[in-house]
Image (tube, rainbow, N blue to C red; front, side, top):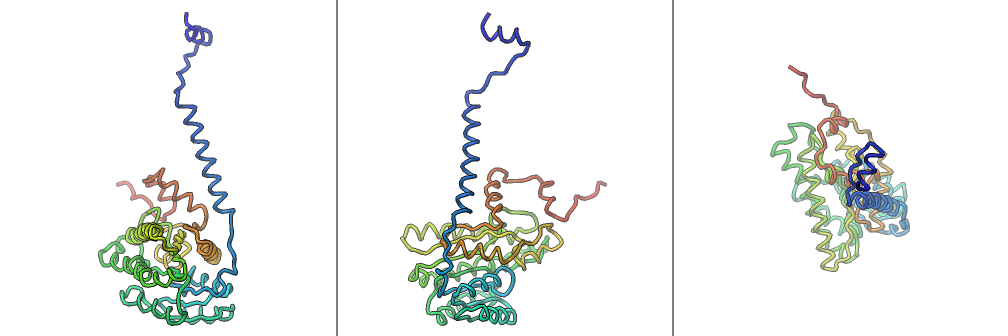
Length: 314
């Protein structure tokens, strides 16, 4: 009788043979989890942000009248940066400019601009160059959000969203890049979680945000190959961190609003340290990684974040 037969007869059980790869496979999973933990710890613990580096910096900030953009303007003002602010509504811009001056910004200018107009990006960049004499930071934060639901998926709405949320970013970048190259400056792109993880009732908006991620990811590689010292920081914020975007999905999502000042400070810290990416809250980084493991979540899982129900049975 073989040893295996003796073991079976003595215990009364037939043990399944262990796969040769089971041990190493388990070890690899543990090492992967440890590595991810170390990566998150290093990413969020190491902080070499120097506030003095932004004193006197020349910043063009779009979408500066409300929400995260307004808070960005106030942070830059406190840090002593020279500012050109732009947004759609002039009255709101004037209020923000006044507050920035009270907070200590040495220079603050504004220009009202509707980024749905293809002519406006050139006017905005030229205005900033004339007023500041050059740029150290181009911070693109503006957006347009079509109403949630099927009415927002028309070709006309999608075309409008692509102009505001993508093409205007491309225009601003190409126009500001020569000045940023001279100053070894930074491009800061305030995007959305929907540019990494698509969700329901946001197809045109999400398409524009995915286009941003691809465009600036490719541009970063091109600049590296050409030895152009311009940093690109992609900022992934939750939809609830953006005032106008949240308005677009009001009544559809159960997501709660996150504090704008903290999100804005995360953007400033990341861009000032020339980080390639900023995630606020930090768990969005994990969500983006998980998307590769669960690319198509079940419908019931998605509904947990939405105020919708399945149709009643007939």
